[in-house]
Length: 242
Image 1 (cartoon, one colour):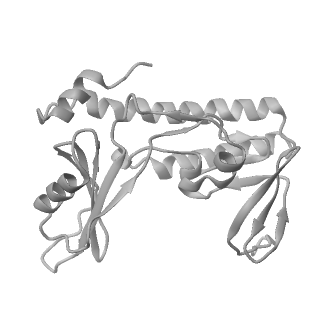
Image 2 (cartoon, rainbow, N blue to C red):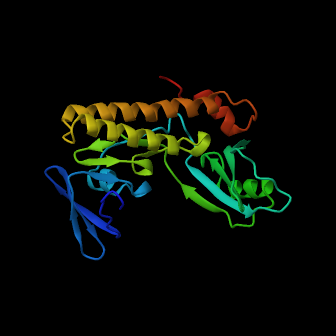
């Protein structure tokens, strides 16, 4: 606002296609908003690049088998110090995080439903986290990214463009990297990006997602802590090619 940017607050209730990609987005209060460039930051819904433009999805399911998480936590007790790091703990069918906040300790168990049921995962989570008073909830996700992050006049950021499990806390890094890259490309093209500029941006951002896939897959391929069916499968079948 200090720089003169007009902020319009509203709930998006759909969008319409046009010759340049997205012609406008519609708000629930009836307003229709046109723009030259749209940034899709709608999270897993991916309202523009996924739902409206129907960009193909590139799955990482040959390298990252987990697709669910059970999440819970508890209020920090006076005897519990704040750990200044994130913990990643090997579990029977995946792994669990611990993230410390000022008043809350957050825990989540990322798992593969082919090797453990939701109830079994919740039971293992509760057994290893007896202090968890928050009712555990199940979250579904898919690891991968849309083939292109810049399609016509839409650029996707964050979970709207792709997602990987938070094994190495890469989401914020990816977001910052892609935002900086877009800013650089817009500046170098004097705000008139060519098809070649868009292609180069998509090559750069796709390579980022692939680097993360390779990085995370190594955690599964070479983890020898447990010999449960899931971890045997991970060591035998995780795709680390490339």
